[in-house]
Every structure is written in C-alpha cells, then in structure tokens.
Image (cartoon, rainbow, N blue to C red; front, side):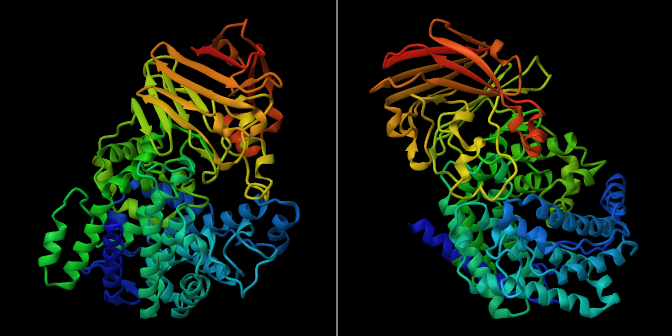
Length: 637
C-alpha cells in the first residue's frame, strides 16, 4: 500500500509539473528546450535516415498520390448492429487512415511538399467524418455528432491527426492557418473534452483499452490542448489510469490477453511513460528518494519523483516488457493463446526496440534489432510500417526513427530462451533440442478469454539452424463479429476447449467463468503438472485430472492422471494441428486409446487461413476404458 501511495503521488507530481511546462506555438517543449521529435522541415529526416529507408517510405506514399479519399457510408457502419459484420466498415475506416499515415511519412522524409495537397484534402475529409471510431464500440447504428464516445480508434485517429499537425504545421499554415485551428477544434470536441469529462470504465481497467487510449489521448493533450486547466486535469487522469493499469497486472508481468495484445497493453503503457518523461529513465538507480528530498528546484523534484515512481515499479514494468520475448517461439512465431490474430510478426520493431532502450533491457534491444533485420527494416521499412497496427502507427515510427543510429549499431540476437515460468498466469515455456513447448493454466475469465485451461502447444525443428514449425497449435481467433464480445462468445469454436489441446471429459467441455480454474501441482524447468478438474462443470463428474507435460531433448511426454466420480461416456483427448500427418508424431498405447483425425478446414475464415494456411485438423484420442480412475501416457516425437 505504501508503494502505491508513493507511486500515485510521484506520478501526479510529475504530471502536474509537466502540465505547467512552457508551450511554443501550441507545442510542448521538454525541459532542455528541444522538441521531442524534429518536425518535417528539420534536416534530421534527410541527413540521419538512411537513403534506402527514405526511398521505401516515399514509394509507399506515392501509391496514394491522387487517390480519392473514401467516404464511410452509414450503411456499412450499420452492418454491425444488423448482421454482425464489423470487417467491412473497419476495412474502409482503417484503409483511409493507412492512406494518411503513408502520405505523411513520405512527406516527412522527402520534405519537398509533393504530398501536401493529398494530405490537406485528407485532413479535410477526416474533419467531415461524424465520428472517428468503429461501430463495435458504439451504441447507435449510425454515428452521431453529439455522441463522441472515446473508444480505441477515435483516440488513435485523433493521435494520427495530432502527429500530422505537429510534424507539418509550417506547411499546413502556409496553406491556411485556419486548418490547424480546425484540427485543434475537432480533436478538442472528439477527445480532449469527452475524455476528461466522462468517467469511462477503461480508466480503471487492467487491459489494453486503458493504455491504448491513454497513450493516444496524451499525445493529443501534449500537441493540441490549449486550455491549461483541462491540460493539467487530463494529465492527472492519465497518470491515475496508468497506475491502475500497472496495479492490475500480475507481478510476473504476464499479459492474460495474450501475446497478440501485448503490443497495445504493456507497449502502450510504455508510450505513456515515455511521453510523460523528460529524459530517458534509468530504472536501476535507487538513490532518487534522497536526492529528491534534498533538492530545492521544483522541476528537479518532479523529475526525481517521476524517477522514483519508475523505481518503485521498475521490476514489474521490466517484466511486463519482457513478456514480448518470453512468449516468442522462434522463426518469427509467437504463442497464440487467447485472442491472437496472427502467429507471426506480433511484436513490432518500432515499439520493441525503443521499449528495450527505455528500460535498459539488452535482450529486448537485441530482439528488436533481430526483428528489424529479419523484416528488412533498414531497406524496406514501409512494408513493416504498413503492418504496424490496424493502420500504420505514425507516432511510434517517428519515435523509433529518432533512435535509428543506435538501432543500426545494435547487435541482433534472437531470444531463444530455454525456460520461462510465469507463476501468476501459470504459463510455462521450454526449449530442448528440436522441441519447443508452452503450457498454460490460469482460469476461464481472463481478458479475451478462451476456455483453454491446461492446454499446451508444440513446435518442432527439423535440425540445427533450420527454424521451427508448428506441430500442435492454439488456433487463436478468427475475424471479430458481433458475437465475439457478447453472450454468444462461446458458441464460436475457437473459444471452446473442444478445439484446444485438452480432454473432453465424460462428453463435457470446459466452462467459462473465474471459478473454472487450474491448480498448480508442481513445476520445474521443462515440466508442469496442473490439476485441471476445476475447469470443468459438475456434469463432467471429474474429481481430479492431473495433467503433466514434460519436455526432454528426445520429445514431449504427456501424462493424464484422472479420477472420475462416475463414468458417463468416453473421454476424448483433442490435439489441434495443421499437419495432416500429425498422428504419426504421437506414440500411444493402442490398448488405452483409439485415434481419429478430423478435417476442420471448412471452419477457417480468411483471417485464420492467413495465419495457418488452408488446412486444419483435430486429432482425437478416445479413452477406451470405462474405469473411473486411471493413468494415460503418450509421447510426441
């Protein structure tokens, strides 16, 4: 409790001092009097960015030269409330924002005004949009000017426009000083006023909405807010929200939303901390309290207080950062627990490297450098920029490019960790010889939950230096629809335990809810035993189900030690795969189990096909015994 009090007092002290900093032409100055990011007319963008990178960004922007700015039809917006489709409107919405982000980056690095007409027309088109968010986050079936709900993409669009205004203000003013004034008014009514005035649920949330919105809101505050009282109140609220987010996280730093949401959870938290800091923070120095108490300069005190709050939470923040590489499998694959929309390229170079630099995590810095080399960021950064979010993350790209010289000098290294254990999330990963395994416990009311308590995945390598490929998988999640975050969520097959690597006990799948949880029986490196009986409903009649997954260089051994109160029908062990020959990798006692392979490829939507290919299968091992107590052992080679 004492640390929490110190944290919030320190963060508020820093925030209030920051809100009182001088402004020039509507823009924040850092304590040393320099802009945090050079504007587009600064020679930095021509002199410091390698020529190949400049060409890539310019060619990316050229694809959009002269392209009309799309209208966002009410009929497309209304589809979500009508037939549940959210993909059509989001495609139009995100595509339009991608167009602006591409043009702005091209203009920044070229600096010749060639893209300005398109940018100006685009900004005018955005001003005429009724609302900047998406229908899945909105009540009415059409957007209303009087309802400026602050959602993820209202905030992110505002941030994109604020960064555009910041970087190109002189060029925009040469066209008309009234344009920046119009942008400021739009951002004020769409985010600055409603975000401060309403007690949104996400301000207290321990999931991605909190930092995702706060990082974009803070960007708008620092660039566009002219009202000093509201500016101070906004920064104070963002400080409180950030503390609430960090407090809600487990001590192991794990993201229960899955690796796919780390990018907008802990990574967005980092953006808030970076925007609020006046200098890069050194998180290992514990001498701040004494120096802060003896300092008489108010600005110095606020800086020390800010450093103090980082010190108090430094270990948790570092662990939250390291989740990005602790869930990394190899060959660009990542763990796909929960709502993962991709199995590769989840961690973005433009946030991984700066985050690692900010906290002094060498493994993370080297991981960022490795990702960048693998994804050709030094010769074709625009391709990665295009995929850096639902639409390109302009602010992140600019912050990353500020460190391009350090990035180029960094030694790239793939973080192939031997063992990871997250005790709060109950996630184990292990790597031995050609095998990689990850297993999770937890409970069935996690954020972006799937009923997957006790599931595990297996990846294999054909030989040294040949990378890894999936053998038994977690499918992740398909395209979001109106069902995804409704009472019908668990009618979607990807959410059900029957389509994870789990037993179906007495014909029963797991049930959703916080009470449906695992208990850790034992853990040691490369081996985890969970009792997953608690994840099943009463009708499963299971008293105990101790599942042990053990990894060795020779393969994976799975032991199912169970006790039922009654036998109702055969128990089936499910294993999901994209390998049609996966059954040949399983050694099992045919007197205990029978095996079949089901082709479930017809259930894959375009998003899942993009992740895994056109084919997916479910291996079903059916328990032959009708005894209520037994032990089943099988191995994966």
